[in-house]
Each structure stands twice: as C-alpha cells, then as structure tokens.
Image (cartoon, rainbow, N blue to C red; front, side, top):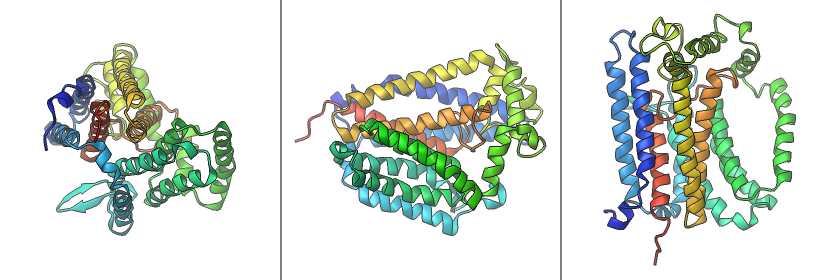
Length: 371
C-alpha cells in the first residue's frame, strides 16, 4: 500500500505541527515534573518520546488505509472491543496499585484497553449513525444507538472507571446531537440524569469512593490529608504560578513533591505553576485551534461516515482536555483523566495519535471519488 501523490498533498500538516508542539511541551513538563524522582527524569522522557514516535508511525499507517474500508468491519470491531473489556474484568490488573483493574499485562508490558476501545466504538457508532441519520429521532433508532454504546460503558463502569464511562457518554451524545437530535430528547436526557442521580446515590449504584470524590469536590477541606489533598495541592500550584510562572524546575509544589501524579493527571498544574498564566493560555490556544481545525474537517467531509468519525474523535479529545483542566482547578471531581498529548502514558498517547490519524485520513480523502 502507498499513498497517491495527490493525497499526500492534502495532508493537513498544520494539525501535525500543532500536535507536535503540544507533545514537545509535554516532554518538557514531564522532565520538570519528574526531575526530583529517584533515578531522575531521563527514563520518563525517553518513554514519552518513544510513545510519540510510535504514535506518528500509527498515523502514517492509518493514512494508507481508506477510512471507508473500515466501515465494513464495524461488527467485528464491536465484538473485539467488548471482548477486550471482558478480558479486563476477568484478567485485569492494577487494583493493588490504583484501586481498579483497568490494565492487561502481556509479556511484562501493560496497556489500558479502554483507551483503544474508545476509538473502536467511535468507528461503530459512526457507521450506525450515518446509516440511520435520516431516522435519528425515531425511538427505536435511538434505542439501538444507546444499546450499542451502553454495553461497553457498563463494562468500563464495572472496572470501575467512571471517568472513561463519562467520556463514552460525552462523545456518544455529541455524535447524535450533531446528527440532528431533537431538543425534546436533550431535555429528557437531562431530566433523566437529575432523577437517576439520587437513585444511584441511595441504592448503592454509586460506589463509596465515587460518593467520596463528589463530596470532596464540593468541599476539599472535608478530607485535606487524603482524598481532598490532590485538589488542594493542585489549586495551590495553579494559583501560585500567577502570570509569568515560577520557571522550569522552580515550582515549589512540583519540585518538593507536594503535588501528586504530577507527570500524569496533574501535569496541567505543573504547567500553571512553572509557566504561569502565559503558559496555560498558550496551551489552551493550541488546543482551541486544533479542535477548530477538526470541526472544519468534519464539516467538509465527503460522506456522513467520515464526518461522524471526526465528530466522535473530536468530542473524545475535547472531553479529556476539558475534564483534565477542570479537575485540576476544582471545577470537576477528580476523575483520573490525563491531558491529551501532554500527560505521561504510552497507551493514552497512542490512542490520541490514532484519533488524529483518523481525522487526517478523512480530511485527506474529502474529494476522492471511489468507483
């Protein structure tokens, strides 16, 4: 397989440059965040750079494949995705360290299947929604979509992983909303959530640690030495950066070990403390420009399947960006969601790069006619 010259010319290199700029900032901040760790930051930096390179290779491979050919395999993809999630429930690891079995270990390496499953389910939903776009407001069609999205969401919730479950709900709703979901269904969904939340709270469907996170989110001082510690230290780090920041390797919360998970979930706090308002504004601007480009690609896609592929991946990335930043400044409960292209983690980086590759693929073939 190889790309035609006219397709190569249609690759949106601006997107690649923006992604690499964000990734470079991530490597820089991971180096600062892990500077005081035993063994230093070299291992973390090498691993992150390797993840970025693997992600770029994944993008190159994805561009070789016409995205429409993937649509034919949506059923096997759906089965494989749910099979992976079942394998996590049966053979997963991580509970001893992170309190939940979300990883599968193979040959000494571990990965989080839910990250890859997000891409697979977006492909499946894009196919289902594009095939039923003209009937999107029919109850049976909506029920079908929610059933296909609901099964993996339940399996992920059982791990338990509420944050990823929320990500699934966000991009599923985003895709059917763009498809033309009527306002009455939106109101109905909101009312259902309002009614179901107290039921879940008092019947035990919400696990104790979920309840604790919500209570601590509302008032971190309830448990300042344990569950409230993360958000209190994060807000202190963000606020202390002020306008210009304290400079790389000079953040007190970061370098003296007060900030937890500083190379992963709370790396935005490191950026805010050491690069200040200027640094986080630049990062958010890059994210905003990237998402804007994605939206333009969805609008210009040559078919509905391609458009919904882009929409689903855009909503997924947007959720992670918003959820992570909101979590670090106290606007959302701590959900353990990393920051795309910035946070340390091979599986998450590769998933984000695959999402970018799919979006670039749709854009590159927006004018191609298939015979």
